[in-house]
Figure 1 (cartoon, rainbow, N blue to C red):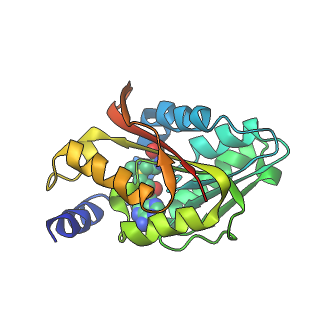
Figure 2: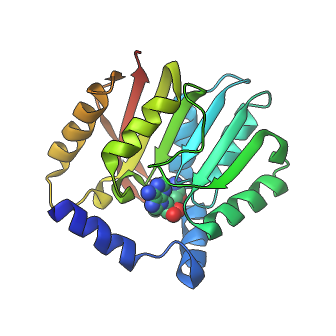
Figure 3: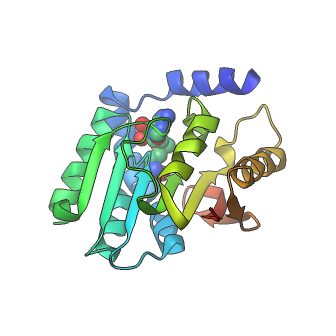
Length: 204
Ligand SMILES: C[S@@+](CC[C@H](N)C(=O)[O-])C[C@H]1O[C@@H](n2cnc3c(N)ncnc32)[C@H](O)[C@@H]1O
């Protein structure tokens, strides 16, 4: 209950559309770029891989992913129309439009076929999902057998209602319960602060 309250509060405080969204998109494109790129490096996709990036924001990771998968496809999803627009523009400028698909969608309803993705990536948005259980179900639904899930999140964005370690352990348990084998969580420093780094693999 407290967690839901905090999520609602953050969602109201930080807008991802409108003038505040424009500021956030510009800030995130610079400040979170190293995290988005690190997530793609963790996936280490094959050149023909299919990768979906949830909550892609201004699209730095989508472009980084597409450059690694010239014979594959990177799907960038975000519920914010503004972020979708920013990501499409970034992909056009980077000339990776033909190997990317950018759509307005939230984690809880991924417009992606079952078992079609080699990797699912979420950077700095899992704390914003309105229903984490449904979002995780969706991630697992779209993953191909053996596919990877990579989650990065600033430790300062972990909801206050729960101690950080407990929150991370619960996320690991939620993934394990969905037949995802999770590597021991790490924390790493990035330009914008310390972040939890989780890597799991679907064992279905
Ligand atoms: C802090 S930004 C992170 C953007 C980018 N991944 C980064 O690290 O720069 C959070 C993003 O999550 C998106 N978001 C909010 N609710 C979401 C949900 N339920 N599912 C997926 N993304 C969501 C927002 O629109 C926003 O673009």
